[in-house]
Image (cartoon, rainbow, N blue to C red; front, side):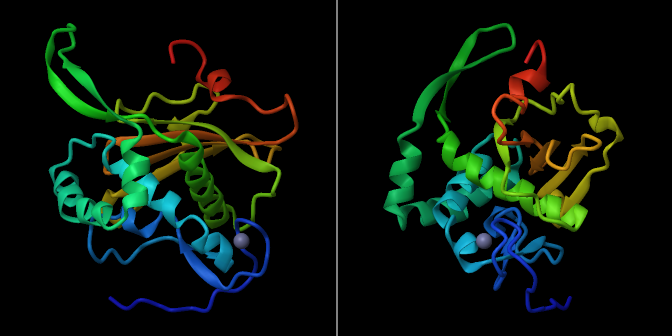
Length: 231
Ligand SMILES: [Zn+2]
């Protein structure tokens, strides 16, 4: 399989400055397959591309340890993630800060053991969720989301796709990358460039659901608003 190396042109999809690089959406290291040939790249300036390396790594850690129930991913964590953590004390410290132990219970509530769990650094994750959504928007719509558009809130879960009631995802098609290591779907509210609902799925089981909205105070929905009751 040949890989085209085209010179990026146009503007950075994240900040609007001239693009000089291509950035992978989602971060390249997310992919478990060694040589997927259909990765998504978007034009980016060097500062946006390189400015979130630590956040990229942190995002990958959180998604991979999000509980995919996927043996291949688990193996990948031990083969690739642990050595890279040991080489990066700053990242390890950041990650372990959120580590705690929780009970494993049966559906009826009986404690059958313990496992490690992590409290995520949401601000750090949010920066990457926003980059992914802005990159995918550009990929699908052929235009850049304005600076007034941002990710207001997100949920990272391995408990299945619970949907966002304000967005009818049933009508949205899944777009798949790298044999299903990553796939996504989104819904756009008519007459509103910015307001979009997104479902990003990693490793067939770890889902990030989010809403892109604008900064005007009081006008954008929180995730609570669109999740409705029972969330
Ligand atoms: Zn930029």
